[in-house]
Amino acid sequence: MATTALLGLEKKSLREQALAALRTAITSGALEPGRHLVETELSEMLQISRGTLREALRQLQQEGLVSAGARGRLSVRHLDAKEIRDIYSVRAALESLAARTLCELPDRQHVIGSLRTAIQAMEAATHSTMEERVESDLEFHRTMCRLTGNETLLHSWESLEGSIRMSIMFAGPEKGVRNMSVERHNDIVAAIETGDASLARNTIIEHMDTAASVLVA
Image 1 (tube, one colour):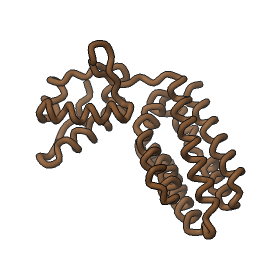
Image 2 (cartoon, one colour; image 1 turned 120 degrees about the horizontal axis):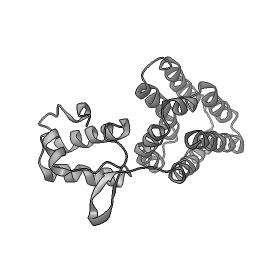
Image 3 (cartoon, one colour; image 1 turned 30 degrees about the horizontal axis):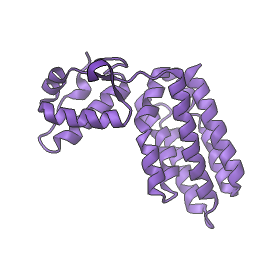
Image 4 (spheres, one colour; image 1 turned 135 degrees about the vertical axis):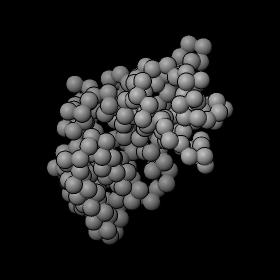
């Protein structure tokens, strides 16, 4: 079992550090889908109490990264094609709302500038690691939600982030990269810049439908 992502915790904020380490191990595939999570093993690796570990695992269960099976035994969630399509349908709904909200702003120039900056970061990450490319892609979509000023929308989107990362891991790097086209993201910005909420909504829906289709193909 790969343990690199599970080592080196500091003594402060152990729950948060354990949570971050486990989340990274799951979304990177170090803890592979379907893997049973043994408390004694993980608490020893992380050098934390089983109580602290349970708190972190409960949070991961809420995020959809961990699921309970027979007798409540926890394992890394395995996403199937239907679940991935469901995740991207919810993403489409949330990001369509974000795009509509941004279209309704009387002055969208600062929004457009921020989104283009996010796209520039995606371009800069083209030859970086897969993890960095995924992060730059997600940062574009996170920025779009954050710019609405709707904290509930942003929180809802962020609650899907772990599952989004897992869906990319499920599909593999080649398919994941196909969804990170800068041109496709430029289309979203161009639609928002017009102020046409219907166009922006349709662009987001097409973006997410295509992304889901690529991942489950």
